Each structure stands twice: as C-alpha cells, then as structure tokens.
Image 1 (cartoon, helix red, strand yellow):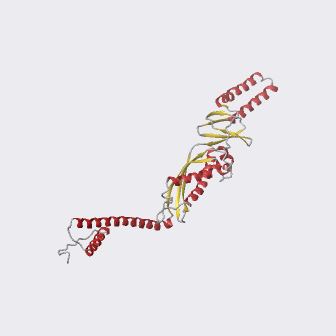
Image 2: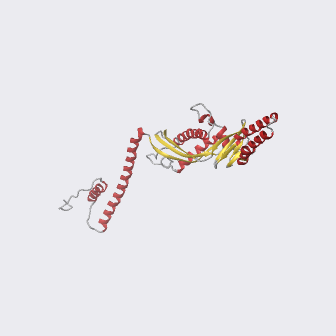
Image 3: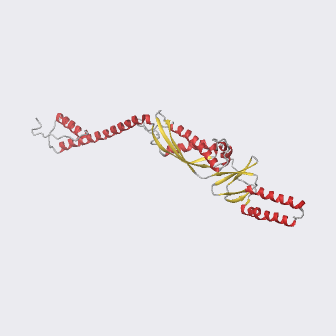
Length: 315
C-alpha cells in the first residue's frame, strides 16, 4: 500500500528560545508597561492584557520528543505531517500534536484451539514483535482513538491509550492469522510418511508464513511484524491422550523394525561364520530351528534363559 505519511514541514522553533521569550521577555514587557504607562490606564490595561494573552497562547506550543517517538500534527482536522525529530520544540499552539511510539513492542498471544488441515483440534500460541511504520494509517485509517478507552466511552488521547488500542488491533489480527496458517497444515506427519510441511516439523518455514500473513493483515493499519514465532503447540486436551498413545505406538513399531533388522543381520552373520569355519554341519531343518531360536532371543523384551543341552544335536 502507498505510504501516506508526510514529514512535518511547518514552523518548528527551538523550545528553549521561545521559553525564554515566554517566561522572561513577555513578563518583563508587562512589568515595563505597568511602570511607564501606569498613570495612563487607557493604554496600559489593553497592552498588559494583550501581552498576557500572548503569554497564555504560547504555552501549549511546547513539546519534547525522545528517539523513536513521533507526533502526528493535525491543524483543525487537517493532517500536516509527522514530526520525528528529537529535542525540545515549539510549534503553532493551535496544532494538535498526537504522540505515538515507534519502538518495538512484544505481544504474547495465549494458546487458542484450532483445527489443523486434517481436522485434529490443536492448541497453538504465538509471540511476536511489532512496531508502527506509517503513523498516518495508524492514526486515521483505523478507529484507534475510540478503541483506546472504549470501556468508559471516552476518546483516547494519551500515547499509552493509543498504543494499547493498536496492541488490541494487532492481537485480533494475530488470532485470525494464526487460525488461517494452522488450518493449512497438519499437526504432524501422517502414518504413511510424507514430505509435506507440518506445524510440528515446519520450524522456520511455518514462522515465515505466519509473519507474511500478519504483515498482510496489519499493513492497512500502518504496522509491521518484525518477528513472529509459534511458542506453544500441542494437541487439544480431548485428544491428547489418544494421540500420545499413537505416537508411542509409532515409536515402538519403529524401534521393533530396527531390532528385527539387526537380528536378521546377526543371524545371517552367525550362519555364515559357522559354515565358513566348518564348526558344525547344519541341515536346513536345524538351520531353521537355529534361526527361530536366535530371532526369539534377539527380539525378545526379556533376557533369554539359557538351557544346557547335555546331549547331541541328534537328540
């Protein structure tokens, strides 16, 4: 979207210089007026009143600004630009100076329940870092001022109130983006195995997708997400126990496959060794019995109980 933010090019004076004028020069002129024109009230009173009005009018024009702060300048409803300079300044006292923070802010989204791509309910949470990038859109294209104090019906005028309103906007959009991304991927790999991206195994790719979706949603409000990370991911409580047993079964099957593969290799090695060194001559039936016994011993969960055969192989 087009950047609508403008730099403030209006009259900006050094605040200390105007403060000296306001606190020293104007009161001094009032005092001199009283001293020299005291007997002529027809002149002294209007001059003193005019100088006093000048003193009062100059006061609202002061403002100080720290790094990564900004003020959106509005003159009787018309946006005049955004001032981002740091220091102590004085501007037209009739200018409305709406203060904003450009600093990065954290937001921790509590885990929410969503359905993944295959319909499993999962709990997923998010932490992100965001900041303002376009003060015009943030101030004037979303109803942030009313949102800031919606609880008491007043318009938010403080920087804390405005930033709180922006944070609420980010939180709502983050919830929507999180649901959208979570619904596009499965929680975990399928039983048959697949190279498809998953929430649990996607890592940086899932986080990048989430960050992209968030920036698409927040661009209209002049905000950007600097970083977004999934910080909580688990099955919903109603299926967590069942899915845990499934994961355990998958792990057991995988382990059994490795055990059988190793046992077969060891039996083959044993038979080849016996044949090569001609230790004993085994026919096919005895080889089958030996293979069976070795596989039982190697694949069993319990240690084998040795049985001493005091006879011969023919027995």
